[in-house]
Amino acid sequence: MQIVELDIKLPYEGRGKILGRLYEKIRGKIRDIHFFPPDAEGISEIKMEIVEDDALRLLAELRKIIKKGTITFKVLSEA
Image 1 (tube, rainbow, N blue to C red):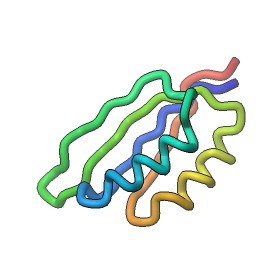
Image 2: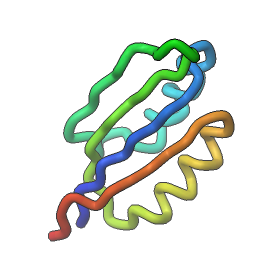
Image 3: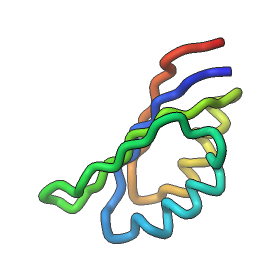
């Protein structure tokens, strides 16, 4: 079991569709989430902490969903 911090940056205009599909994948695993307003270029940022067994598998699935954005992750703790 790992606690992973995801930092997702994506265009603000298509955020609603992407968030719905993200929620389907990580439902019940979210510990903390923060939504930040878009910057001057229209890029919105989402930071979340999730509890996951296989973080690399989840990251690969999320990259398939988010085409026009970036995802970075950091493992905060392992149990």
